[in-house]
Length: 286
Image 1 (tube, rainbow, N blue to C red):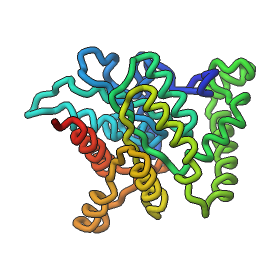
Image 2 (image 1 turned 120 degrees about the horizontal axis):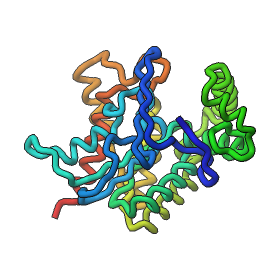
Image 3 (image 1 turned 180 degrees about the vertical axis):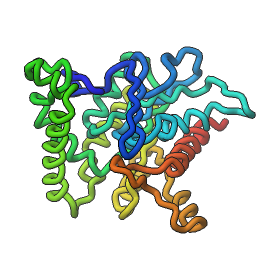
């Protein structure tokens, strides 16, 4: 599903339609510019919204329409039973990326589509390690188009399941070593320099930045980012209260999928989408 990129290391290919059944439904659908959207273009929309992040944004392990950007699209545009083209929510989330790569992807799409009105960002506990991994392994990533990797290796990685599994296991081992090294650290605080860079990038694009954090198991990173956003006059999508309220009202309803891809269940993504919609709605009030 991926191809090499000289600036951002790699990104999703254009015009993908991948549907596979594992212990979950694997669905990857991209349009002609590689965004995870069913819309092939965004002409006619009043505003552009870029949803930036990793697998929690792309929607790994979920149908495309269960990811939060798809649900946000409907929340923002469905009025009195009629879909109106107000906000084009462009899902530029990329599975496995760290925040530095995500900023690179943001700049590529801004150059391609123009300046968004909003940039939505979900940070993740994996971001710090992912940036280290792919800055270290950029020259050996076996994705299509990498000039440093023999074509036969690129082909094998894309077509032979055993080669792909070996590569994934190698990356997984690398990630586990990094995770062990930083497990007691605040993963959001480790990302502060990159968050500051993201803020500057949004300001340069004259776009409003709205941020949040993916994991709330300990709430440490989530609350740290909320405080960072407040200090830096960045909007924060506060979905934690909604999830805790639902958990209290419906005890036992799991947040995470039990299949091997993990990630949030659809109801959690709907709460996240609503939190982003509320922040955008507040900005648009007279």
